[in-house]
Image (cartoon, rainbow, N blue to C red):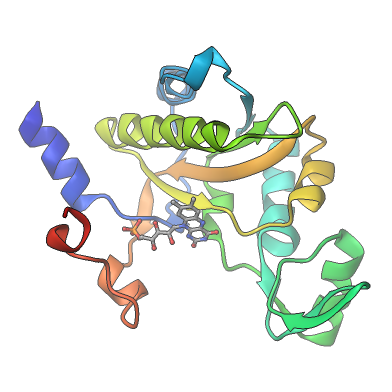
Length: 208
Ligand SMILES: Cc1cc2nc3c(=O)[nH]c(=O)nc-3n(C[C@H](O)[C@H](O)[C@H](O)COP(=O)(O)O)c2cc1C
């Protein structure tokens, strides 16, 4: 058991490129139910999880997430109408994404995890989350990742979106926190290659 867990923790990597094979329904149930099997401060459970599977509407939605929602500008754009600061950011609406696309400044298709056969979207049901709610969602996320890995299924998180745009796009009743795609990896990029200018800290850097 401990060897298996250590191996998973050692080998797990964020995956953004899945091979297109579906996840069977039993595994989908096991992964999605893992969402609920974590503690929550004061039993608040101030979150829900939207499940995007493989039906036609969900596949269309995932393509749009990939192309127009879970993405950023290629160059600095104005923060908003009230703030002149120039930043790289996610588009705030479909029309803004289309506008950036037509100008060649939309960095689309950067989060391939949105095309995974299973995508989970954690969101806060009460629109005013407290710090502990974020911790609760983190625990719930990690439970799904470990459960999936035990089933031989990989995952990739995605927090690259504008909350209001995603909320409207998916018609969810709350504030999105984070998403994760689950499937079978086609390819993986090791941590040190992804972040050569920002390497992962060593154990002794973190444990003091
Ligand atoms: C809360 C959270 C949000 C993340 N959002 C994104 C994202 O939007 N796009 C992406 O490619 N990776 C995202 N990641 C993946 C991290 O960048 C990744 O975990 C980190 O690079 C470490 O790589 P590893 O998971 O392969 O070890 C996210 C990870 C976490 C924990």
